[in-house]
Image: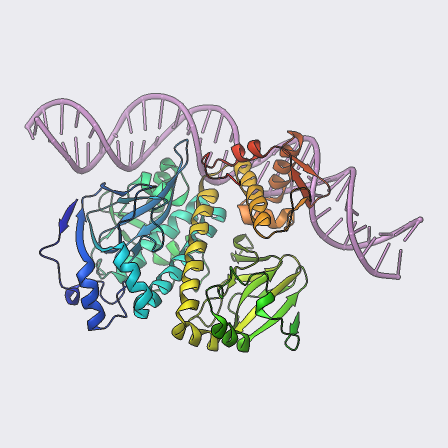
Length: 244
Length: 244
DNA sequence: CGATAACTTTGACACAGATCAAAAGCCCAA
DNA sequence: TTGGGCTTTTGATCTGTGTCAAAGTTATCG
């Protein structure tokens, strides 16, 4: 993990300036945030926080992907969030975190010291309003995931996950039409996200390949050959997945 | 459904005054809320909102239990929230709701007109701060439920659910030690909450009865005979379920 | 560049929980 | 008090996904 205090990047050039917790802030408020922020970078696989750790920072994901997961005493793991650029880590008014956070890919975080950040939250409505919005969006996403975990078949889970990767990588401006998309997780991590085993993930992914829905350039990078079939396999309402 | 505008109850006598979205408000602010509130009551089974409905109101649950669920095109249902006293319904800044809300028991809601409520949210920090807290609590609960749905066995799911009923009914002040506790849902509704079938719910509940963990006075009311065994069956960490 | 570890695929088999079916219990209305 | 419609229980069987095992592939590091 690397702290990047001195070359603290300018907010004005930040790729998530208009989506993250700071998105509603005016120049003055951004100035205040810059005082308490620092960039930290992590390598793929680095642990960021363990359950029970002190939360001295809260943070926004600037670049890369982090996972948020819960572990049972006997080792069963369930991922409860996949954090991509502009997503928020940590909970103001809580001193500790109650799940594990790990960098899934190379990762850049914009970290705010928790206590001063909480003060801003109390005094700057632009921050608290945006954080409420982010929390409510997360809650909606969590509820969609509950439907997936509780009721979808393995095939539907995989199709939903792949579709989500397509959608989010479009938003991030990566993955231009011609470039292959990326699975930012290993088969094992995907299985923990979807409530499956890694063997089932592997089988279902290969089934979609054999059926000509997906095409893989390597284990991580792929293209969607048949978007309609992918969506049909997800089990979601016909109007829910329209991209353009 | 009955609207109770004229006999609008006093906030000062409200059972959820100190837990709901209004809990941080001072006398002035409560006064403002009283202008835009009205009580509505529903009978068990009454639908409250369907997916896609206009959200003209947001509301707090005052008394009773409501369910929040998602339905797939082929009829599979997953409950994504169980709303009990002090829980909040609706999302400011959204004009429609994206799941079905149904009264599971006789239900009293304290409804606020959405648009004026949103104005208060923007101007009264005590409301927005409390709503953020409520949203974050919901998010934590949703994540616990994701672990349950994705990784727990049928038995663990049932035990977790029963334990949750015990805990919440203590908080609500109902269910004094000697009184039997209540399952506010049918077997079918429980199965939709836990991602199971109603047959599995029935079998697991009867298994806990046969093993002497629970004792039923009728189909809905029960007592916990062996709290330690119940907790052990839930799959949760040993320190997570201590009540006293 | 070779070896050693990490990840992925594939196959055979087992089992928890789903599905299908029917009986039993409970509740209310007439 | 009786009948009919719910909800719940119980039983028999089926199946999707997990488990166990081994081989294949790709990445990493000395």
